[in-house]
Structures are given as C-alpha cells and as structure tokens.
Length: 367
Ligand SMILES: *Cc1c(COP(=O)(O)O)cnc(C)c1O
Image (cartoon, rainbow, N blue to C red; front, side, top):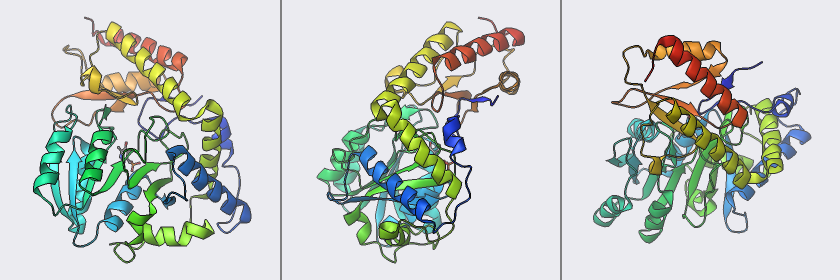
C-alpha cells in the first residue's frame, strides 16, 4: 500500500484518478482536446465566473511555481510596479522572480505568524500611486496561515490595481469569491486541493487584464498571453502537454463534483484538521500559529521542547509506519508540518495520531 502523504502536495489521489492515466494519446487527438475544453469549463465553474462575464483560464505545463512565474513575467509590463505582500517562503519566491526579471517591486514583508493587515497595505497604495499590481499568497503553505485576500481585494478595487492571488494550496477546498474579491489572476496547480497528480498549473483570469499583455512576456515558454492566444479557441498547447496528468485531472474534477464540490471537500478537510489539532494537543504538541489565523490545509507544529526529540528520527520512524509528514520552512523557528489534504479521511488522521504517539514514546519524548 502507498504511504499516506501528510504534505502540501503531491498528495494521495484516488485510484480512479491514477487509472485515468493508463492511455497513450496524441496532443492533437480529438478526445484529448475535448478533455482540455471540459477542464477549462469546469475550472471557471469552480471559480464562479463565466466567459460572458469576461473571464478565462489557461493551463500551463510545469509545477505551480511555473504558473506563478508565467503570471509575474507576463502580466506586469516593463513600466509596471508590483506591491508584493509576503509572510512566508512562497511570497518571497515571487520576490525572487521579480528580481530576476527586473520588475520594480515594493515589498511589504511580515513575520510568518502575522496576517498582513489591510490598513498597512492601504497605507502603501495611498502614498505610492505608481503601483500597478498587487500580489499575495492566499494560504501561505509555509505555515498554513490564511491571508485576508478579501480585504486586500477590496483595496485593489478601490485603488484600481491588478490583483494577483497565489491560491495554490487553497483553490478547490476553500471557497473564494473571485468576483467579490476583485481577483484579476488566480494561480493553482494540478496536485493540490483538486487532488490530481503533478504536472501543470492553471491560471484563472479576467480577460481584460491579460489582453494588453501581448509581447510583454520575458520568456517564451512561460508566456501566459502566448499560451492563452493559442489555447483560447483550440484547447491545445503550444508545446507538449502532460497528457496523462491532464487526463488524471479531468477525472479528479469529476471526483470533486461527486464529492459535493468545494463546500463538501472543505468540510472534509476541516474535519481532518480539527481531529489533527485535538489529537496532537492531547499528545502535548503545540502549533506555531495562533488558532484564529490557522487555515485547515496544513499546520506547522513546534518541535517538542524535550531533549530527546530529534526531527530526523521522528520523520524516519513515522515514515517506517507509512506516514509521511513534511519538514518545516520557517526562517527562525524549528517546526515540522502536517498537511491534511488529498485522499485523507478521519481514520487516516487517527492512524497518524497513533503512529505519532508510538514514535514519541519510542524516542522517550514524554511530557
Ligand atoms: C505548492 C505551492 C506552490 C507551488 O509549488 P510547486 O513546488 O512549484 O508546485 C506555490 N505557492 C504555494 C502557496 C504553494 O502551496
């Protein structure tokens, strides 16, 4: 049996999703083209937007970062100015990109356990009128914190800025009011909450915000405008698509619908999360974030304050038991992470809790 992946992705997927990959198909195959068409329609439905309202979506080969980079390197023109709001490694990664492309960037940086307050953002938008774009991570997977993309969205509307949201680890499981939050570009990928396998990312966007970006891309392969112009009506890719991954994703979307859509998946993940917190608290573990800021996708746990605790051993012993947790990513605090998304149910959380209890006992970490 496969290991249980308590990570932010790749995740455990359904057998039917894996089975959907058992086909050879050409990239110009009619059957494949109609799969891409259906995926694009379904993604717009999930986002609660329509083509008639001026929205569209593009699939982009590569992992989630490739999708983020395609937006950053295409949507912000040479004379653009990005306000980057960051409180973790994924936000900082956008900063790395703008540096490489020489995009003028103002960075509002917060500690990893702080939800960036909207007033701080407004202060910058009010004083620096040269800002054209605003970017933020929704669920900052570094900690699992949920950022307030709603309030910041209202500000981007008020100050008339293009709004870029990295909703990689939340889209499909956390309700997002695309129009209400005034989002221009939202990025997510195949192997997070939709529960597909890795291989591509997708961008859902307001057409009027991409339309003017012809020729503004800094790369050929990640040119989001180029990809859209090509895919828009043809539902085919400029370069080789990850066919099997796309077939799996098509199945995964079907499966999400069968489960009851975003509200029901959200409910399952929340149940997983609540049981995880209850169980780990009973074992004496503490979370890094304040509960009120903690999302229900992934949680950072502080290393137990005990001289016998050793993370490598903890990880290995859990792995031997088929339970895969994730290392921490915090800049200044020792943490490990436990995700509760993917094909995970309450019984899987119970098994993980039992395994953690056993391993802590074996290591002599007792409270
Ligand atoms: C997973 C993730 C990404 C993309 O990471 P990849 O390793 O490229 O798939 C980007 N942003 C966030 C918030 C994520 O959780």
